[in-house]
Image 1 (cartoon, one colour):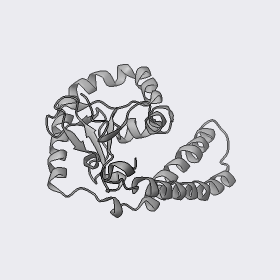
Image 2: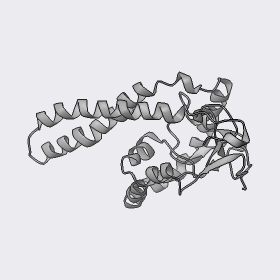
Image 3: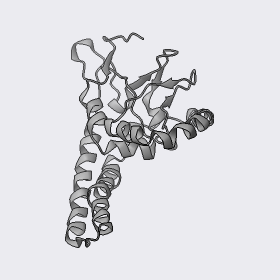
Length: 219
């Protein structure tokens, strides 16, 4: 599938955000547990004065439909896409990136998930069709309505606190050690503040507007 580079900026594997998803170990939780996936190719419309959140399109290589990326960012359809993103036009799987740590875990646990996946894959696709039908009936989320500060503080900050502080502490206790309560109490505000800062950055980044004029494009 060819893309109009004059109209779109292409985010593929070489893009920093794609590399971050592939290489950062925390995202294996998003993929394997939450079922949150990132497509291999995302197109960003250049000649538009809409916020970045509303200028992202996910192309389907099977039917060449340009799907609004907000279809997979709306309530009720952001997670649960373990096998990939299903195109609402042709119902084929849109190729997605894999975190390298997710691949390592999948390789190690291959005997445990191979046959269940073969059995449930078709049923999952049917459920995805039902979810997409409901999403298409509702208006897509608007960039200005997203509370990035709250998302960053609770989701990013909270998750990182659990992943970086709570889980290591639980592991230490299981090995016969003791709780480090100082670390537990200090870590909470640190990660919540970090999440808040991340939310502010995402608010700025995702609300950046492009420009319609050819001579003043913004990516």
